[in-house]
Every structure is written in structure tokens, then in C-alpha cells.
Amino acid sequence: MLLTISTTVRPATDLGFLLHKHPGRVQEFGQSYGVARVLYPEAGEERCTAALMLDVDPIRLVRSRDRATPDYTLGQYVNDRPYAASSLLAVALADVFRTARTGRCASRPELAAGPIPLEITLPVLPCRGGPGLAHRLFEPLGWRVEATALPLDEEFPEWGDSRYVRLVLRGEVRLADALNQLYVLLPVLDDAKHYWVAPDEVDKLIRAGGSWLASHPDRGLITRRYLGRRWALTRTAFARLAEIGDDVEEDLEPPVEEDPAAELATEDHAGKDGKDGEDREDGEDGEDREDGEDREDGEDTAEERAVEEGSAAERSSGEDPAAKEYAGRSGPARGASQEGSAPADAVRRPLNTLRLEAVLATLERLDAGTVIDLGCGSGRLVGALLERPRFTRVTGVDVSSRALAFAARRLKLDRMPERRRERLELFQGALTYTDARFAGYDAAVLMEVVEHVDPPRLDALERVVFGAARPGHVIVTTPNVEHNVRYESLDGMRHPDHRFEWTRAEFRAWAAKVCGEYGYRVDFLPIGDDDPEVGPPTQMALFGLAGASGGSGGTEGSAGTDGFVSVGGAAGHTSVRGPVSADTDGRAGTGDAGDAGGGDD
Image (cartoon, rainbow, N blue to C red):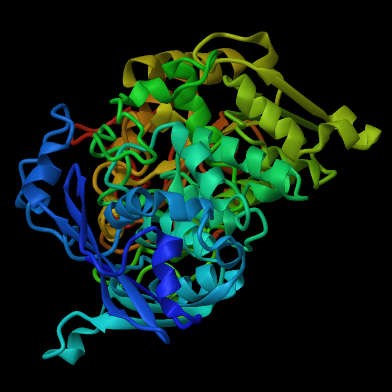
């Protein structure tokens, strides 16, 4: 892979002083995965060009992987890493131009301290978001951007463009700033890192981006991608950026997505390799770090994290364009353009927004006055309920004290008007242990929570919610695993903390079991586009106690359809009525025409 840096400052050969690399020599720098070379294709008084060439050895790159995470496919040997600019080039740049990145130059201090005319060229750059994303990230930094999409095959133009671009940056920028911007933004554009994203990555980000990142309009996107969308690290980075700039932490922090949009486009996602190997900068020792070592002192247990990550991550506004690429539709076609380049008619509202609207619409239809959000996370649903005076009592519960603290900040609890504050209650609690505070509500919501609970603990959750608390209605949403095939590049579950993901039939079988044991009835609603083959991306169940008013709690012969409002997809849904059992094929059934196991829900 290749990176060239040119200048026309006079004398142009002073570029050698700024980079601390002599124009008359070819210099080599060993990397754990290959060799980096610096040479000067041209070195004259009027124009000088320095080239960084990185020769990647795919065998050495594979051997640097963690042995605990083997990959038996040819993809680990045959891929674009030796040819396309990526985090490999960013790490080499940081190592080779380490002193230049600091802005120090004893021979030319005035030149190093100020902007100079620069032209930077990257012939092949993976850009998950297309040329538009390259413009978004570099233009606010003062660059004139030329980003040209490269065709998949020049001989077959009908195949369209690849996800690679040829990038040329021109402008008058301080060289140290330019190098630091490249160091941060190369892996951001690729949306991948070849090494494990450890806690010290936050320090690297602040060190390289401290002079420009806090004021960048896409700082949220940059921070999340650079840190591999690791919530704890991103949270810390936002707090430190808030100290640098004038923004408060909540304004800097866009929500963390749980939907595939936030996890997709990560075939080389940081963490797949398991360790950072030897690819460290500034002389760091490359100490191996296992997944669990990233936790802070006093951080929640694995069981607490299961609910926290499924709730705090979920209650978000979906501002990340990566989320908008996939959310709210049946997923992109194979080979569809990535972030920032999807056609306008294909981009719809984020799936988590549609999910929130579906839950709110159902609660309003039920005329529920008191609502408890079990697994409230950062408090997005709680805040939406408080905006509606018809909900006279709103409670948020989460197992994570950290999630509740963030919810309090999001809701501005310290500045909340007294009347609204009287309607709100936040407290810590585990959904697998009986708690008298869960009882006495018209409706309870478990939005993207059950899939974070270990299957052996589901019985305890059912007993606590449906047996002990026994609200009039319970709303449960969960991913439809059948729909995952519509998400390009999704490998496995939608979120690394998911303990399971249900098919539509499995969800109905579980709902039927709950109804049979605890005397509820249930209706189902698709959320998002209801794909005729694989169903909607999210499935929702509305449980109602027999004899309760509204929704599925109607009379025995009621149709049950008016308990829902269609949001973002087909209006059809199915109902299960007691007595309920599971059919022999594993689908929920009632023995009458209201079959809940159909594939066209």
C-alpha cells in the first residue's frame, strides 16, 4: 500500500527536515506484519514528494492473531489488507513519522509550526460510506477533497463501484496535524482495525485528535468507529473531548446502537483478532490484552452487563449514519452501497426509532396510565413517556447503576420541573429477582432485553414479571434472527452480548408457554418492513391479562387487532389466546383459526 505527501513550499526539500527522513536515502522500518519504506520519488526546490510504502506479509499478519480465535478460512490469507490503506498503514505512519507527528523540528521550527501547501494521495483506500464520507470527514479540517470511487472491474462497468476510493487531499495544513488526522481517519474510513482495541486507544485518540476532533461536526462518528464501537471506551473519550471543547458530555455523545447497523461493516472489527499483538505505537510493548481486561474497577458483573448493554445501548436516537443505512427497512441488497452512499429512497428512519414509536403507540392505545420500563438503560423510552402527560407514573429500572446515572443525565434530573419529577422514579433492580417495586403498573415494557438474559435465567424473569409483578399488559420486543440474512456482512448475532436470538416461531412458542403458565394472552406485531420471506427485523409481543381492558386483554372472542398501531411495516399481526399451548412443531397455537405460527405474520 502507498501514501504520498507532496509540498511546493520553497525550498521543497525542507520536507525532509519536517519528516526527519533524508531525501537522498531509502529507509526501512520493520513492522510486526511487514516492512515500511520511506523514499522520495521527486526532490526538487519547487516540489518534493515523500512516499510511505508498506509491504505487508500476509503470513506474518496471520501469525500475529490470537491463537484462541482461529480462522480456518482462506480469507485470513487472501484479502485486501496488503493493498488497501487501513489501520496497518496508520500504525506504520505513526511509527515511521513519530517525531514529525509531534510538530518538533529543530532545523526548521518556524516551518513545522505553521501551515504549508500539501498534497496527500492514497491510491486505494477502503471507505465504508463512499466518497461522500471522505468529504464529510476531511473538508471540515481545511482540505480540498478529491475522492473517486474505484470500479469493481474496469472491464465490467455494469458491476458498479467498489467500496474503495482514490483519495487526494490538497490544502495548507500544518504537517503534524495532517499526519495525526490520517492516523485517526484511515481506520475510521475503513471502519476496522487489525488489532485489539484496548483502553489505551482512548489516549491515542485524544493525543492525535486533541487539536481538531472536539470541534469536528462528525466527532461522534469518528470516535465510535476509531474505538470499535466499544461503549465504555467511547463514553470515556466523549467525556475527555468535552473537557477539551465547550460541549457538555451529553451533547457530544450520540447514542450507542445495538442494531446490526452499529455492528455491521466490521469484517475486520477490532476484537476479532483477540489481541493487539505487536502493533503498538510510540515504543509501546504490545502487551497482550484479553477481552475482559478492558473493564473498569467496579464495573458491573457479566449478568449485569447483559441487561445494561441490551438496554443502555438500545435507548438511543440513532443519529449515526451507519445506523440509518440499515435501519427501518428490510436490509440492503447484497452489494448495496455503504454508509453515506445509499440512495435517498432507500434510507428510512432508524429501526430503533420505529421500535420506540411502536411501543409508545401501543401504550397509548391501551390507555395505560402507569408504565414501568424494565431495562431502561439510558432512559430514552422513559423520557418519551414523560413528554406525554397522559402517563401519570413512569418508572425506569436497570440492573446497571452506570446506566441509571446516564439516564439521570439524559433526563436532566437535577433540572427537571417539580411536577414532572413527581411522575418519575428510577431505581436499580434485577429482573431475575422478585421485587415488590415492580408491581402495581398498568403496563411493563421489556424492549430489547430478553435476548441479553442467559436462557437458564429466562424462567426466573418470567416468574418475576408475569408471575409476581403481573402488570395488566407486558410489551416485549426482540430481534427476529431470520431477518439477519438481510444485513450484509453480519456474522453471528446482532450484538456481541446477545445470549440468543429467536426466530418468529421460537418467539411465539416462548410467548405461548408464558401465556399458559401465567394466564396471559398475546398478540404479535412486526416492526420495520415485514419481509415476505424472512419477516420483520424486530418482533413485538403484547401480553394482556385475561379480563384486562384494551389490546389482547379483551373478551374471549375479540379480534385483538385494535391493540396495535402499524409502524414502519405491514399492518398485519397474529394473536394467541388462552388456553394456549405449543404445537408439536414448536409453534404457538390455540387449536382455532388464530394460528400464531404462520410465516406471514
